[in-house]
Image (cartoon, rainbow, N blue to C red; front, side, top):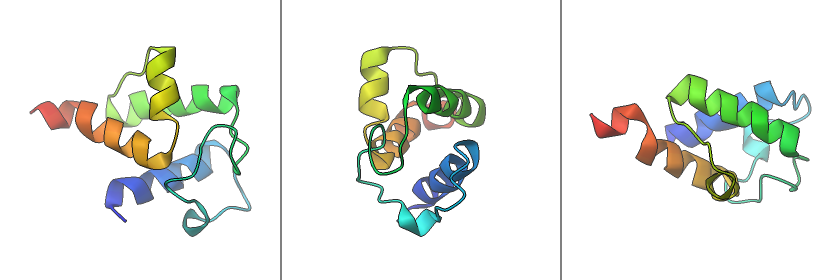
Length: 88
């Protein structure tokens, strides 16, 4: 497990107020939206804001968003590839 994925688990628990969930409970390859965590479209908006604010990565296209938020692994990979730090 890499540091970014672990960090994202903690951030998701915080912004989505998943009080009964621990980072170890989140399967990074499980479906995010509509999966076991109960993430819906409003939650996705909160995650988009967090990704833009925390990592400087913009997700402004529904098709990209569907791919990016399919799993935690996909989200971490997208942030790694598209963050301003990746291009410097």
